[in-house]
Image 1 (cartoon, rainbow, N blue to C red):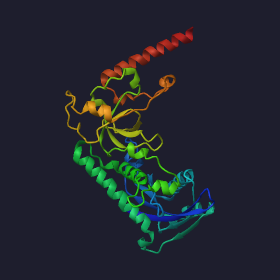
Image 2: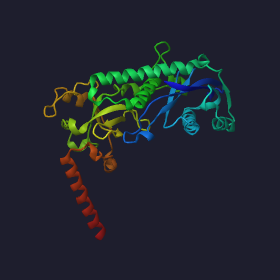
Image 3: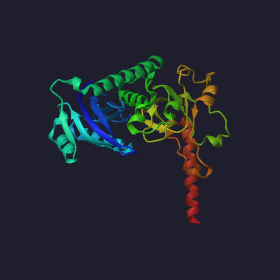
Image 4: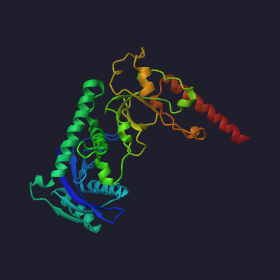
Length: 335
C-alpha cells in the first residue's frame, strides 16, 4: 500500500501564549483518478498522507508521480492547510527514500525547518502514520465494497482516491467515543458545529441532479429521470460548503460539484425501471433533497446544469433558448 513515511512536529499558538506540540506523518498509497476524463498518464498514482499523532488528524494529497517535485508540492499544500488552521510546521521526521533526496532536503532546510530520518526498516518509529494508513485504507475499501455490493454496474477501482479522500474527511470530523472530540477540533483548536455529519451520505450512493433554479418550478417535485439525472456520490467538495457534493456522471465519467441533489442513501432506486417512478421518490425528494438557495437578485447568476445532465429534448430546448437570447442581446445592442 505505501512506499514512504514522514513524521514532523508542529506548534500552534493559543490565546494564552502557550505552544501546542504536534507530531504528524506522511505516506504514499497507490491510487488512480482525478476528474474522470484524464488519460492514464495524468491520473493519480499515489498520495502523500499526513497524520497528526497528537490529535489523529489526517490529510491526503494525491500525486500524479512520486518524484521529489510532486512530493514537495504535496508538502506545500499541506502546510497551507495547516497554516489556515493556525498550525505552524517546525520539524520533520522521515523515512528514507524520496524524502532524503537533495531537492526535498533543500526545500525543508531553506524554510528554516528541521529534519531527521528513521532507521532503516524501522517502521515502528513511524507508528502514527502506519496506524493512519491502515485506518484510511480499511475504511476506503469498506466504502467501495459496500457500494459495489449494492450497485455493481458502476463499480470502478479507479475511484480509489475519492474513497480515500472521503474516508479521511469523515474521520477528521467524527468525534472520538472516548474523548467526544473530533480530530479536526484538536488539530485546529476550534469547536466544530457538526454540520459535516449532518450532511453525510454513504460513499458511492445514487444521487439525482436537479435544476439549480428550483424556485422557478413553483415548489413541484422533480420528475423521475434516472437515465439523464442519475449520478454517483463520490464525496464532498473540498472548496465549497459542507452541503455541496461531488457527483460522477455515469455517462461521461466527469466529476463535478452540484448544488441541488436528491440522495438515495439506501440504494433503493438502483434497480428501478426508467418508466415507473419508484415509491420512495416522493419521500426522497422531501427528506433527502439538498438545495442551495439564491436570492432573487442572484437568480441570474445561479449556476446552470451542463448539457451532459440533459435529455436530447432538453438539450434542444436549451440550445433554442440560447439562440433566442443571443438574438435579443444583438437587437438590444443595435438600439
